[in-house]
Length: 351
Ligand code: ATP
Ligand code: MG
Image 1 (cartoon, rainbow, N blue to C red):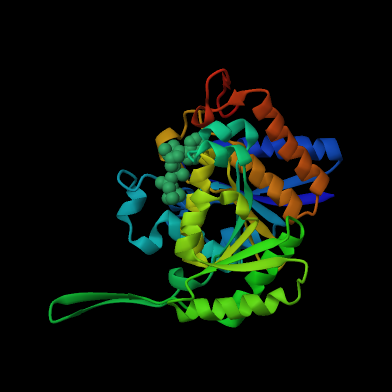
Image 2 (cartoon, protein in one colour):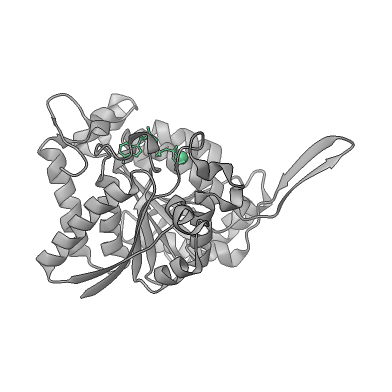
């Protein structure tokens, strides 16, 4: 099979971790008899430096003509980087929001997995970390507060700011269908998270998810209020299989879930649209504090490449091979400094 992969190294540690993930992809291709064609794409700070804007039309076109895109990370240190002297719509993150919108990436998948070998890094009680957990958070990515109308007004010297949270039923239905499809390939449980005791948008969310659930009789659906979910993630994370939620709740809950694994350098993510196309990137940011030092953990990006093989190319044997290789590296005791513990062998990003 010929894989046409768009490649966005990005900013900070991005180029280092993408470089390592590409080596893994190349090795998988060699082993399983595929060929890979990479197209390099500039986004974020790297694009500002080259073109003065965080995203160009050419970059969007290059991404669209790829089967899938592998990305490192976008952005820099907000206190020191000149990119943050620009107005918000010209900063690196604006490029990321715009490319997600241009590609119609409405479903953001973030697995939060506690690996046996890293249970010691989990900040939760020992009986919880011993039990382990493996959940998939699915966050709606193109609606809600992040894309709603916003304005700030001043009246009689008093400033008022408004953000609006809007969803229509089609936007809810398509992400719910994705969540149920993925649950079918996992433990067949969906927890839909909302704030239906307060918000109209959440009441519609709940209605539409209930409708979609009728087409998936094997999947067990439950609804949970977002405040309760935030609590349950630290009390009993093993109860979750697929968590389905809107944009801002998903942003917050997926960060919380990643922290309870104890190792954000390990967590992958995927953003999908209606086709097999996806944008794959680590859940963590560009870590400017450690950029260029060859100490970043490349595993989140390597696991993102594995998700790409699984979801965009339907190559599950190849994806399993990558996942197993990651587990073997951990079993063999190799650790980057972010997940280092006693008795293990410390290695750098490239190593
Ligand atoms: P963003 O706003 O882009 O999500 P952030 O400020 O929330 O970024 P990160 O850039 O993810 O945070 O970094 C948070 C901390 O985790 C930093 O100290 C960083 O060095 C560390 N970190 C992030 N990714 C990795 C990695 N792959 N390997 C090692 N350390 C990492
Ligand atoms: Mg962050």
